[in-house]
Image (cartoon, rainbow, N blue to C red; front, side):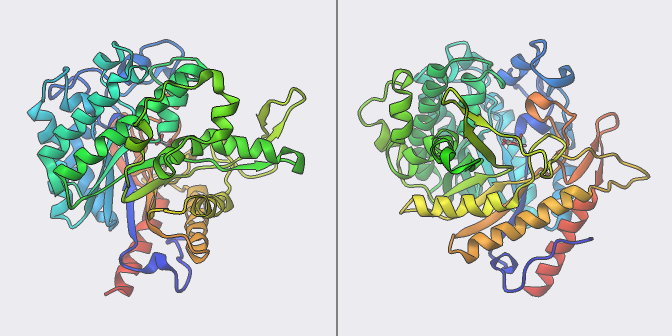
Length: 449
Ligand code: FCB
């Protein structure tokens, strides 16, 4: 297949539906000691033996810090409407209270280059690269970090104002809090139930504190937050409770405070002894209205209770998986979007801000035949179409990722790009999946002429 087929009469064919590609700062930039940047928690974490596959780190990554110009051209050549990127906090505030004009200038060139090519810009303020100097004071376990985040949001939004079309406070607080501070799989590598919930509350508070700041400095931009979600399915009827709990832990714990102004009772009751200190007024701050929410979807979880009443994820070996070991389950995306729409009365428009697959790609004679990724995108675009037909408002879709990059604890072995990166030469090659995206967008542009 050389292009994705959008269903007839699909909203996805409409010119106002936003198609984009996404990246994040630490995963692509490199240049970690350049332009006045200081270390983030990921620079530190990567140095700890055994934390990242093959001992990889983000020192060079895709060298986007130097190659950004050609990268923006490449994005524009795909014909997308929008580019979703993130800003590295330690480039903007390399020391506590010290603004780095070079950091702001780096992102300004990129934003200008996108606009010059007619693309809108979606900027995430926090895609996990917390300045190490804040971690040294407790990181997200310290309530003060939420206020520091609002200061950082102020610096960025005062500088850029409405020049950034769409602001995102946080990317996936679930991963930042639970992988980072509960299970220790991500930076900073803290393990503890109490710590996980405390970090999550402070992240959400940071989001809430930043919202009025962003609105004031960028009154015409859109403001929101991005969540990951892997919807749960019970293995058998007796496991329905396990699935409900899994949904609460996996995404409702993060989305409910924003859209309902409360934490889900399933968690506050079951985890009573680990609950964070929630001060009066915190939930009002966190539940400030948002213009949209972003949803990142990759896979689902099938769950059951084990003999001790513990919830276990049940692998589905008979189903198709991607190279990273995640089940390919497009129906999960439709189900998730419909479930969310049912759960929240005041559901703002949704962007699917990430979706994609890691495959075991090789570049042969300048060609990358990523057949599975093509099927992944095709079926997930259809899944979004289904959700729209079921009445969910979805305004856009961002493929993860523009190009292969530093896949966190998996290092460089997991390739999520539409574009293949040769890390020896930094050469970029459009995979077949990128060509299919481009052809689909070309056809859509023709239709909408
Ligand atoms: C998401 C992250 C993104 C990337 C994909 C595969 O959880 O937001 O940075 O790692 O997973």
